[in-house]
Structure formats: C-alpha cells, structure tokens
Image 1 (cartoon, rainbow, N blue to C red):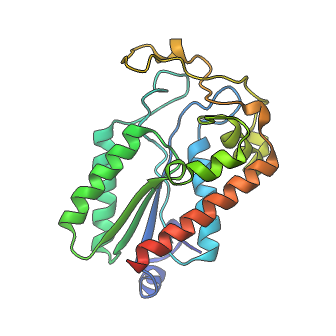
Image 2: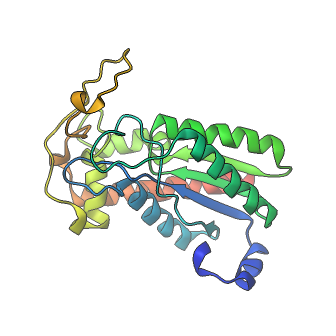
Image 3: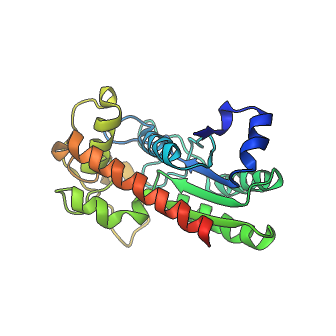
Length: 238
C-alpha cells in the first residue's frame, strides 16, 4: 500500500519505477442529517481506497476534505469551498504530480454534488490538453455505482444521508452513527433557485436511514472497491 504522505522521497522514487498512477480523493465537510458525521463523504472514500490499495499498486494521495456544497451550504456544520477554488487546487495538484513523474490520474470524489463534479471535470478537460502523455479519470462513486447501490437499498431514490450512506458508516465506523434520522426528501421546487434551502430541506436527509444495516454497508463497500479497482485498471490499459 503506497500512502503518499507516509513514504520518504527515496521510497517515492522506488515506487515510481513500478507505477505512475496516483489517486486524488475528494470529500466534503457537510451535514449528513442528525445522525451521521460531517466527514461522511470523506470517510467512505478514504476507507474504500485503502481497501483498493491493498489489492493494487498506486499512489494514494491525502484526501481533500473540503468540497463544493450547494444545496447543503446553509445547514449547520457544512463548511465548503467555491468551484473556482476546487478547480485551482485540483489543477495544481495534478500539475505538480505530473512534474514528479506521474502519468495516470484519478480524481475520485466521495461527495456527489453536481457543482463539485463539474469543477473537477472542467479541470480535467484543461489538463488533458496541456500535459502531454497523461491520462485522467474523474468520477464520483455514486455516479458510477448508481445501479448497484440502488439494488442494495430498499428505499427508492435513496441518496444523501439515507439508507446506503448510513449503512456504510455503520459498517466502517459504527461509533460515529448517532441513532437514525427520520425519512425525509428535499422539497426544493425543481425549476427554482432558492436562497433558503434549509427551509425546503430542514433535516438534510434524502432517503430512509431507518432501513440501514451493517450488512448493506458491507455490500456497498465491496461494490465500491470492486468498481474503483476496475476503473483504475481501465485507465492504465488505455
């Protein structure tokens, strides 16, 4: 397992002869209902990638905890950054890793917000034009596993702080789950841009945490690990 922040510069040079793939994980500090920790997105992607790193050799970079949070930005506890900050940060990280010899890049987000993913994808489009011989992949785990995770969940349209995320945190760190919030869904008018989003989504839950279980969490993590491993292999083979 090559955990970037834990190795020396000599080890970096040695491992670089064996792999030129680096994964940059992105999370968020964001409300996840009254029952899950603010670092839920970061926790899930970090732990999943550690499991992937036991099966496959690549550089695992430290997570970027802060993300772009739009719908939840006014909820208690959410502390976010702007899309322009994320674009600049991700561009700098990939650019400097490229200078150090990396050529295969995966920007993997545990936070599925559309503004976050748009910022990362826009950056990747620019980088692939600028950096010769590099390959880059950008995705959120929920984008690439929507079908698989929906088959695990009993709740139709399960999403933020709902059945699946609660199940995964129960499996990974049960001590962080503080009971179960009630089933809830945002009531923001679809065609409106509203300022007070908390008014339309007071509990910050999208789904039914009451149906969460450790067993569902284990199945979800296994699906996430398998899919990420597959996508890393695909990128390296291109």
